[in-house]
Image 1 (cartoon, rainbow, N blue to C red):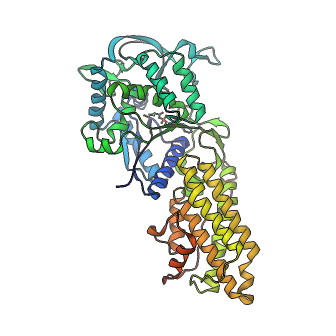
Image 2 (image 1 turned 180 degrees about the vertical axis):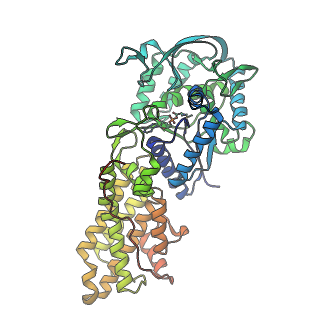
Image 3 (image 1 turned 120 degrees about the vertical axis):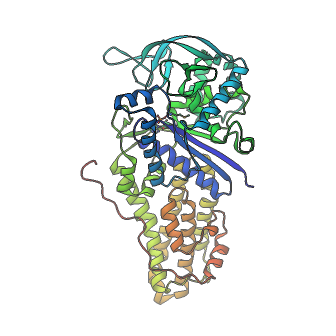
Length: 519
Ligand code: ME8
């Protein structure tokens, strides 16, 4: 069987409806999953909802429902959104599932058996929104003089009996890990942040709560529930059937990539490897902390109430337009600011005017001038060869390297470069003028464009699965013929040798108008 690839997103807090950040992260993960499947790897892609903790318990109380009722309802919105956005996860995980409680308890017992858990009293500044304790030194002053966490959320002085994890013991092993595996945390800027944090010294971590009971019970101490981050991180193991399914674990663990946002890198790159070392479980290969999406420069969050419904954006502009925009517009590790105008302008200039128009012009000419029969190649010129070489280089080399490296914007930039080259070629060759003067040359030009367009469509199937599947279907390219590494001349000869006939082509990406008023 092919090389396994285990990829996870963060599991999302279902204390409100999904926002654009959730869509962004999950779409990026989906593109990577589809890319690796296209390359023949056996992908396991997991996402889901993180349902325990004080934040969920409080939100449910405010709404007059039980935490489970809240989780059931909200988790449904995430599932529906991911279906709408064409997310191809293999598993949608919910931490309230019974098997997850067993897995978290198994991890706990392994850490306890290693002597890393002890009971004590905790006093400290706790932020409910972040579900995290902070050091006095990390706090910042709010506008009204009150203390805020480094994320800008309110903190409360909290005192409780708590189990502790001996995080301090793992300071040196963690520093060794970052040094020996420089790719463990990406991008570089996040790695440096984590390094500085760990070098500054690690205190033992409070890992249980007694003030509420919505969580996984601490084994042997029913009055304690685990700190939500302990059970949340364990989801990556439970999804593989930990601790019982040793076959799945052997196949997919360690995870190849935990894809998460920059605000939770500390949990994934410090606490999680420490828990795993303690329990004697192999460490994931990489943690990537992507940037944040800002709405016209402002942070969106459920707690602040300025969120955009990503499902509405998809309805307004099209799922694939949204997917393309989110990956094309921003460098993946960095923050990005989006607006309706930016989506419309990117889609119109690149998808409608450049790629869509190229496909429409080419397919219409074949439909009209060749009765839909794929034209034969006669003599190729240096221009034809140069175009095919450009497309093959981009699709067969540059884009796969960039995708694998999570450099999505770079992959799509190279793609656009090849689309521009095709447009320059069609304008220079002007096949519409050749019908009467040199029919054979017209055929060769259209055949060259056909091969180039099909291959460019194959290259963005991971980003725009729905529309590229429609286009490739209309072009007679079946799923098994979609190979980014194909030798285009041979590939086209085989396709044109069949009995496929092109139907009247339909527009791929309509021109969009920016809404007069923000919806
Ligand atoms: O943090 N732009 O859940 P969450 C981009 N349950 N990404 C964003 C974002 C934005 N504006 N806002 C949030 C949690 N994210 C925990 C994770 S994992 C074991 C537990 C990202 O619903 C955020 O960084 O607050 C995180 O990766 C994901 O969305 C879920 O955030």
